Length: 109
Image (cartoon, rainbow, N blue to C red; front, side):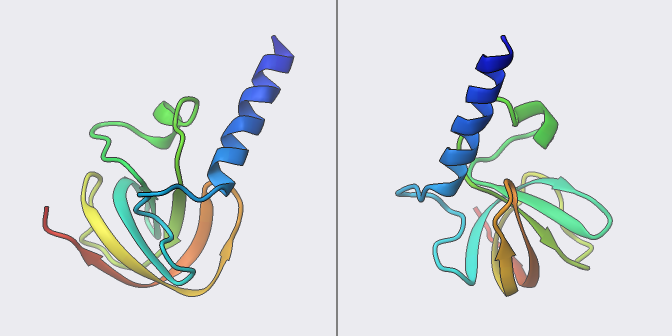
């Protein structure tokens, strides 16, 4: 059972490191887009697909795609919103990735 969990984690990490055709996140090294899944005091979590009333903890076991925590002081952001962002500086390649947001724009669907 423990081996299965380790293998599942490895698959998730490898899937997060590969680039996906059609992915909305990290299209270039300095910008990307996606849907906000979580909002905290000073950061947001952005994923490829729209999830309503779910947190990262709810989906992380089954989620396959890219995800990034963006540090920001923007206050009008809410889960479910589609955004486009620009990165300030580099990206920490953890999973989910982490970076400082230079600019965040809400995209009308």
